[in-house]
Image 1 (cartoon, helix red, strand yellow):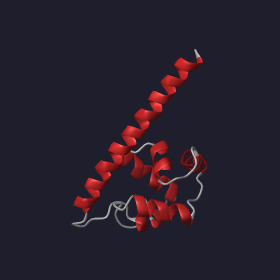
Image 2 (cartoon, rainbow, N blue to C red):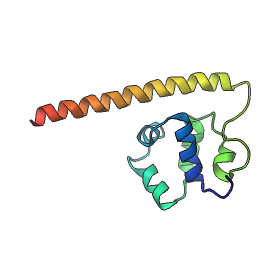
Image 3 (spheres, one colour):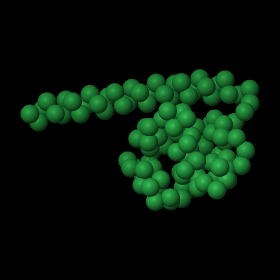
Length: 112
């Protein structure tokens, strides 16, 4: 929607792509909790972060993210490559999340 803020549109994109906020933060190299904090406060997305988003999520139409105009996803024949890239990113994210869960379990065993 055009009346939404970019942070709200980013949330819609992440939900559609089934990307957790933590995985998103890791992928664009921003601090843990940044996204949730900005979403809660209705904050702005800085230009540096927009650049990182544009570099890492090529299927996302950055114009839509900023303005709400057009389609969320870039519609082109290049989407096949993006879908492959998305699948690879999802695999990496799942692997990272599993590693984090394993590390937390190991930490609990060590502390007990």
